[in-house]
Image (cartoon, rainbow, N blue to C red; front, top):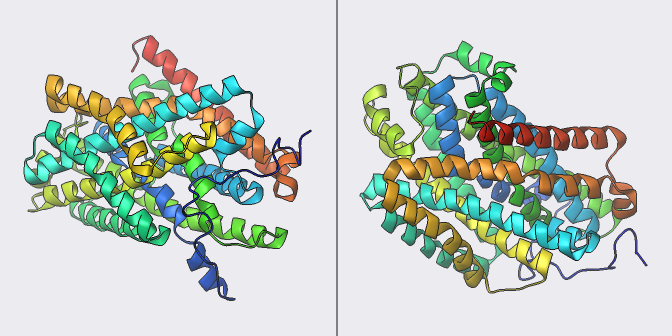
Length: 441
């Protein structure tokens, strides 16, 4: 007999070691906002990982500023979906993976778990390659060796989780600030066209009509709205010690939305900055085929005429890769625990995820070199985009169900907007697959 729309009255929380460990104290709005700040930044790093770099660089160099509108729309979608994700976690006490296990049949749950793990592996693949490329550019470490070295970041996760969840959040915020400062420098020295940038934020039917443009646009969408981030956010918002009363939950939902919206605004700036720098540096100078991070690194300093431009670019890439790996560890743990109720030690789970990503990355790096890893980066983001609907539709369905959400159910206009976004993502994915099958991509 279902209880309040769910089969089970209560579930064991994922990430039990950090569940409700962050106190929410203080009577002022400012203090409470600070107490709730943090999970949004862990989410935001997934929106500026090395996969974004590959798609943004390709889009900026090939099409100038015209795909900035795709980054903006993707970011607005992300704000909406992450808001729904945090509301699901706070209102029901379930993360998205647990909600799926509690609602769907066992075969459906296994299918959703498998494709989510595939998405995490694709994301991890991008982070592995990005970090390895950064190590190669900065320290001349061969990419194949750099890929293997990325597995060592499991030690950082273990140490930070032991110290407390706030330490993990603090490190991620520092890495985000590093990326932001680096790209502010790059934007300033690249001297982009202000009219071109503003025009790039206006919608254009050319994006849909041009198969190559659509392919990169879908890659940007896949790199921006990350399916596993929806599972992650619905869990880590529960690290806060908010009151379990309706009033306490309403306050938590409000502050969690504020946290993620501010953090995703930073992600919007960084993603737009990458594309703007590519457009101002490469597209403007006639280098319209720059789709590889290494090629961008080589060209930046001579094209911009500023010493250190390439080194700053590589430093931001390293910070991006390392911050993203921290959050994919947590996402992998949440997905496995939520869907399958299998609890592994974090370092074991991390090495499994890393192994899945490292093997293809090493093989491609050895056989095809830098060009192969660049294509692998863009393809990994398209894979993420194709799998996105399988996380979005359950999220929208659950948060629109009054029997599951109670007073926190989506309002009529929110339900309409959420389903519109979900359907739009699904339609674009079908279009993308059709383009790929006919050779349009």
